[in-house]
Image (cartoon, rainbow, N blue to C red):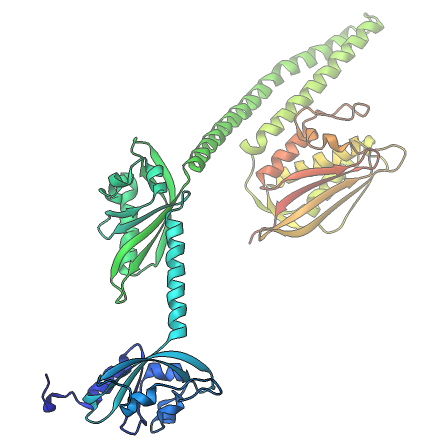
Length: 502
């Protein structure tokens, strides 16, 4: 027991009262307010100078409107209902500065520490408290349901790494029983190569540098194989901020990782195979040039030297040989062009596509097959590209329009470009449109395959490689190419290129 001279100073008591997490009101003997702490200000919406010296009825009214209710507070203050007890717990109604009525749970006692016949009232808003308790119960129920999930693995882990609690999904993921997992630490089931990064993230979490982390992680299954999971970890702290334990949940992504690895290996194999095929095509095409030149040269000599000594049939056969050699030479040149798109492509620079289209058309329009053809285009954009391949791309598309023209109408070719945004990335969509014979859209992909021609009744001087080269060039530039057309109504070839970079 404290002697009278051991009673703490009122200033000390008041300082402590203001730090309490509940609303606190102190009354004098006539039930007027002498102290009003910070939480009481928040609960009632008054500043201390607005209530100090006012009767407690301002905040805890004796009656509420027309409700058949009388506050038990005054009976306690008068000493009429205390049953000789120094304190009591009462269910009351409070009224804030806006006039709103709310229920409060009040603990009241004689405040002897304040050197007088005063009363100390501690209040808690029961509506808020009930809501908080309800939310807490709801959160606990949600966590329980989540923890018992059969699709997400959960674990509660001590700061040391020892598993405190696990669910069945985690047991299934790793092949252990609950009893086996609860006897080991997360370090024991983690792939050793991943431990340093795991420990670094845990340290950042404990130090408060991060609130939680999410990472792809490799576990060791009981049978010894690797299990991939997306792991999310957060740290639970006590009311003082001290770390208590970790809550972790993991989702199995082993199948996804295995599929990604298989795709990566397949892509690498395709890349290697394509490189070998391109090398083979380049070497084979180059090596075929010499015998073809020999055949062409000696056939020409045979024709010139023995022209008057052989009959017309022999002349036709010689012509067939010359034509075949010429066609073979064009095919070899086409294969070389296809192989060189990636193996011999130049660096990308800023390219003026208007100038390229004009230069290409100047060469093509001089050909007899282009007689009467008209090219239309506005100002075309500058792009970052391989200038030589851009020239080849437009040459193939424009010559394709000439080859598949209609002869009952003058050929008209329109080249245009439209700027657009795709996934936040700027690009240009070019269109080369003609009024030629068109094609059935059933062949819209086939025409980009090597040696494929779908219009047998037109000029057969083509190799069936030109559009395949176009697709390879556009692909090297990160774009795509496609066609839309109708038989007898022309074709419109579209391809995309990235905007010029700064």
